[in-house]
Amino acid sequence: MKSVTVARAACAVLLLLVSRPARADVTLLLGAPYGKLGSFSPTGHAALYFDRICAETPTSLRQCAPGESGAVVSRYGGVGGVDWIAMPLFPYLYGVDSLADVPRHATKAQVAALRDTYRRAHLQALAPDAPGGKVPKGNWFQLVGSVYDRHIVGFTVRTTREQDDRLIRALQSRENRSHFNFFFRNCADFSRDALNLYFPGAMKDNFIADLGLTTPKQMAKSLVKYADRHPELEMSSFVIPQIPGNRPEGHRARGVAEALVKTPKYLVPLAIVQPWLPVGLGAAYLTRGRFDMEGIAVAVLQPADLAARTRSAAAGAFSR
Image 1 (cartoon, rainbow, N blue to C red):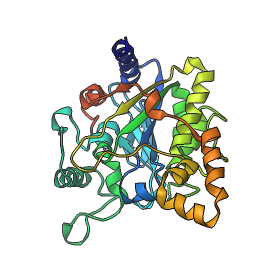
Image 2 (cartoon, helix red, strand yellow):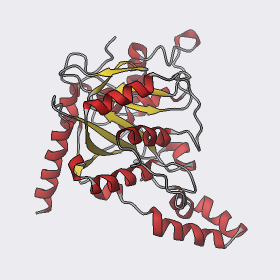
Image 3 (cartoon, rainbow, N blue to C red):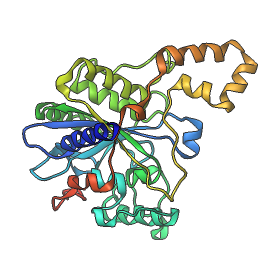
Image 4 (cartoon, rainbow, N blue to C red):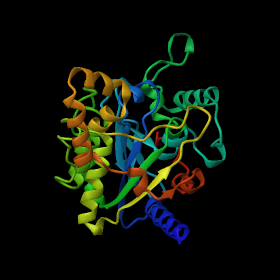
């Protein structure tokens, strides 16, 4: 019975992800934390996938034409000096334009080569060659092949083309210049503000469990709670697995209080300095911070499941 339920959920998600001219969708994508930054701050990364908004360039948006596959939009620090960047879906996930080129296993060297090949073809304006034609440093690699670093949990809700137009106007009417701040102007803040344009007041910070910060996990929790009150949004959820070989499997994203009480390198010093602090943080997490994203997302989407998003001639690249 469980396998039937999972199969039905997967079918529902695929129906949401396939382009439909009569409607639009937005998907909140939550990337698991990884690497040194993930160890320091295990909150993960938030991005938004719009199935009816396309990237004319990495910093220019428009409504998609029939057959185009939409774009992933998010805020990054230290990439081209801009505030937000838009990427086609399949390259954002897998770093390639077609299903046939997605490896089942990829070493660090293979992932680095794959990313640099895509950068040279499409991202020179944001990440130009270093002196001597070498690969530049910086966070540009987060734009290409995200699932070689971590798994992604997605939450999809129904939207309208009018809402998409509103977002396009909002983003392109202001200067796209970076003021990135890790604590108060991060990727989760961008997702919160964008989703609140679609659903005013839906996305709320958790001032108790996240100590006043905005976290990807709280954005997912807010969207799920809002969708529970609005069944017409037809929420669906899924997991896109990490492709092995490049990094160890990523951890689950955590909120601030949860990270502090579950990470020994933070918990032990806090307990030594102020023994009551871990108790208070634990209470904040248990009462306001618990949310099992992976438990909700029962469907698992593999590259073949997502390949339908890139079947148009321009789906794997920018329009120009």
